[in-house]
Every structure is written in C-alpha cells, then in structure tokens.
Image 1 (cartoon, rainbow over the protein chains, first blue to last red):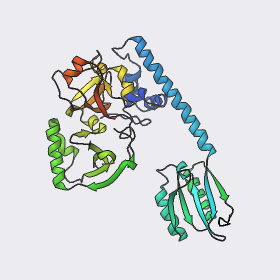
Image 2 (cartoon, one colour):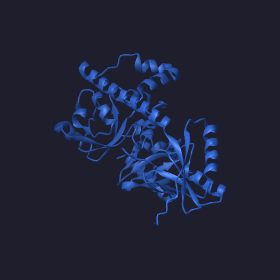
Image 3 (tube, one colour):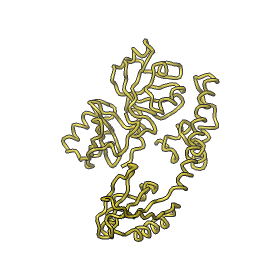
Image 4 (cartoon, chains in turn cyan, yellow):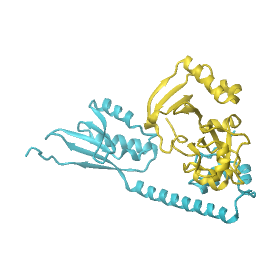
Length: 178
Length: 179
C-alpha cells in the first residue's frame, strides 16, 4: 500500500515537491519514523550533477517560502474579515435580509444550500442563494429576520469553535422613483 | 487536462446499466490485459458504477465514490490512486529528477527528460497515443499519467519537443476532486 501524506495528500516521497514540505516532514517523523529515516536520512542517488541538484532545491525552497507567506496573509485576511448580515428595505415597511461572506466558513461544515432550506422552513419565508454585485454567493431571505439569523449564526459559530466576527448593517430606504 | 477541475465541472451523474458495465470491463481488459485477474476486485460485481459527464466531453467512471477511470475519447485512462494500487498493470516510463518539478506543475514532458541517464524508456517501440504512467527517478510511486505524443523510437531518435502529453498528475484538480 502507498502511504499518503495527511498534510499535502501526496505519496510521502513527493512531499519535497509539495508546497508544505516542512509540515509534511514533521508529520511523517511523528507518524512513521521508519519511512522518515529511509527518505531523509540516507543518500539519494541521482544522475544529476551537484549544481543542478542545488538549483532544484533552491527553487523548491523559494516556492515553499512563497506558499508560507501566502498562508500567513490569508490567515490575517481571514481574521479581519467578517460575515455581513444586511437588512435591505424593499418597500417602506418590508425588509429582506442578505447574508454575505458565508464562504469564509468551511464548506464541509457549512452547506449553503441546506442552510438556505433550513432558513426557509424556520422562518416560513422565501429563501434563495443569489450572486451579489461582487459575484459572490449570498443567502437572501424574504422577511425581516436579521436578529434571528444573527443568533442562529452565532450559535453555529460558537458550537464549532470558529473565530469569525458577524456584522450587522441596515440600509436606508431610498425612494428610487423620485 | 485536469489542471483546474472541480465538482462544478461535473454536469450529470448517472448509474450505468449492467450491460454497459460489462462492455466497460471487457474494454478495460482488452486495453490493459494485466488487469484481467483483478478486474472483479477493482469493479465488484454487485456495486453500481456511476458515470459522471463533465466539461469538455470528459467522462468519469466512479465506483464507491472513488474515481477509477476517465475517458475523453476512446481510451480509458486510469486514475492515479488506482495506478498506485496496481502499479504493474499499466505501461510505464520514467523521467529524470530534474523533470519532476515541471511535471508536478502540469507541464507536458519533453523528450530530453525521457532520454537522459536518470530516465527509463521501454526496449520495444510503442505507438503514438498510447496511455503511459510516468514514474520519477528515485521515487517508487507513479506521479503522472499521460499520452505518448511521439512513438518511443521517435522520442529516442528525434529527442526534441513534447514526448508525452500530460493528463493527470499529483496534486492537480482530479487528484483533489471531492464530491
């Protein structure tokens, strides 16, 4: 059987060409020391000259460094971003609620379609997934249920131990006909 | 082919009829004769086969939620995880260490990478368009699947330009495909 790395999903011997080599190495060391020693503590025979070999390892290191920086940046972005609950007036006394930035949540935990159905039956309103002006998916609920949605999302986030802020926005009514 | 591939590219999912499954099996055996002994292991008799039709006329054959084969035109191409399970069943070539980096980012394989000292080519001549599994120098497992863009003799003599057109490689869209 082939042993796959749990970090980068490749067969372990290809970790060195992956984007998270350092992490993969640590994982393998703690999980399967025997193979670790075989892979990294023995001389690898290669037909290439030393200079070429160095060139490869340099470019790989560069790529891995880039990837690490990117991950860091993403993490900071994630910490700064928040889920937006928008309360948008439709007529003077009617509102719809749009929830944006839901793609921040892990799609394995949070299924947009299912949640949409759930909202529809929970609030007895129409509920759909539509693309907003930035071409990102958002859930649109027909009805003034912003507070309920917020408490539901809070509960969901707390129970899963995710650290994401939720922000509430109410848009003003503007009479477009004028 | 699968550099960018996700479940959005899947159009329809259907279960295939048992008669179609039978022809699929016989086609597999005729294309890869060494699979004959294990064909029932790969595709168990009672388990339904699903067919996913995707963008660009690509079809995936799925059993137990695992992609086993895919085809774009006539040839059935094995998925890499299947190749890892039955490494001896498919024709193979080997590239040198310098080429690994490029293959794993999806480049077609150039002839010099196949003819240099670290690489291995079969003795006999294989025709153009044959499906081959690509191994790498110093590595045990396959890292890509591709199609010969030249016959083996041409690769050896001309030694220039694309030798293998790459289909699937480690860590591409197909490898990371999840339903």
